[in-house]
Image (tube, rainbow, N blue to C red):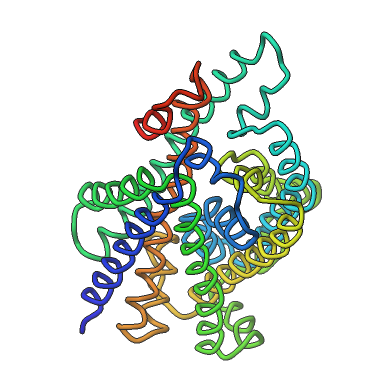
Length: 369
């Protein structure tokens, strides 16, 4: 079985599983609250991994490894920068958010923010909805573009066809199962990403000869500036460079499709368990992609697009069948990330601005956007 056939078969199996999850989750979705927040019954593993996966996608796998490939040693700052966002989210924000959302019976983040604002409640809900839909339009488009480019280069098909097929599958299981389907599929995605974050750097280090040999060979493929912690920067500019990278972590607390998993946790004990899982997941995946990017720089010829380094080095490290499965997992992870943003956008358009949230057809209306 050749490489392309392996990737294609693995993708088909994966997509069938996603649709199956949608049908399964549909049985657990009986109300608007179930559809948008899973009935507040999320366990720690699903909450932690699905929130991490929904916040991570093309940028985590392709972008992080591509940054390490292009930047060299300064890319190391990206690891604590990203992980610090997870630490803040789960140590400070999650316990407070879960408790407050449960007390006020808030279904969405917008509803939680607008609670108790009196006559300003409706304008706040409309403003939040507008911000979410506007921002996520670009976010979702970026995910589809990344997946489309990768599909097109792998199967030699048009990007438009790739995006259309992936979008159709995502819409099917999201419409069927809502929050439960999205959370379960994102958990599966997160597990695949963690596996890639463990296997790929280990295989890369074995191919290079270990950490010491990797450092030695980096001397010949990176410039002197790329082997300095702050690159070509020094003094106050170097400090600004590091602080700027740490700003990446500030995006974590503000993402409604991430924090809604915290609102859906069943109790405070689940919050305490989920924080350990989520932070460890981030360290494994982000740290792993950093090492993969450095190994790729040593092992493969220069690539035209830095974000394709991960796919190229995977082909070098593994035989065709294993590489096909690994790349299929990466492609699937990228494509399925948009489901959380789509669901939150739907909640903004159909729930947050709705006048009657308890209408008998509210679940149907929730699916329509």
